[in-house]
Length: 235
Image (cartoon, rainbow, N blue to C red):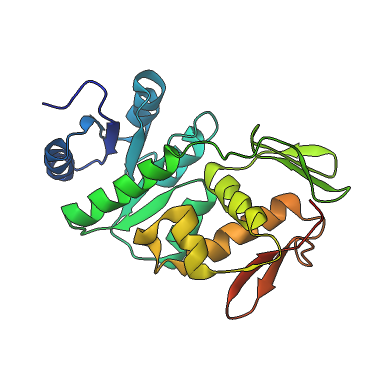
């Protein structure tokens, strides 16, 4: 029987057989598990039960996984792993843009799913960075990692947790090139060493939020064929 303080995972799939399969394996890993069979039920469960992570199927009738995720993200930052039978790059990009934390394609092994769950929960449980003072990059961009605040052009910018971790590691290595592999390892975890598209996507998201002109970045610079470098600045 799972411990009372075990992580609570919400499984969302309109196929009862798939929910049973996932639940059986999560039970063996010691998680507490609740279920939902459609999008509307999912929204109720997220609001009332406050799960630590949601496994969300994409292909559901009426309210599909993408629309369900969009509504979840209006009020909650709960980690979400999308489940889909389609290994489609456009679907993956759409899910990540809506705020998904990861994407797993069916059929998947229990070991693969558990590895992804552990990685996402580990990132969520990371302690706040140790930096607590205001970092003034220049007149346009200021950062306070202790308070988790980012100001661009005099306005506070809201970052998703993954965007925040990415920016933190780039700034901590300002002036130095970070390879795709280094970024994946620090921001996502070693399980994601082959997911270089995650880096490209989130660099794009960050630039859209903190750069005066994202098409001509001032802060996050591309080192072609290698990785990215945050501009060096006086500290």
